[in-house]
Amino acid sequence: MVISSEMPEVMHVSDRIVAMYSGRVMRTFTSEEVTEDNLIQAISGISSGQAA
Image 1 (tube, helix red, strand yellow):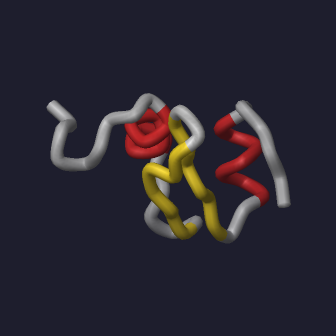
Image 2 (image 1 turned 45 degrees about the vertical axis):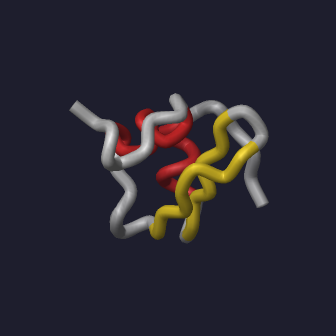
């Protein structure tokens, strides 16, 4: 398990990423599907349906 606020590090070393916001799991990503943009949205509390 890795806990980090450094997105490039997390994206490089992880097979699966769980994004949390205010203590709640917002989304779980695989290493193949995660992008910096969708990870930022998830940790900012923006669900995929709310993205502009």
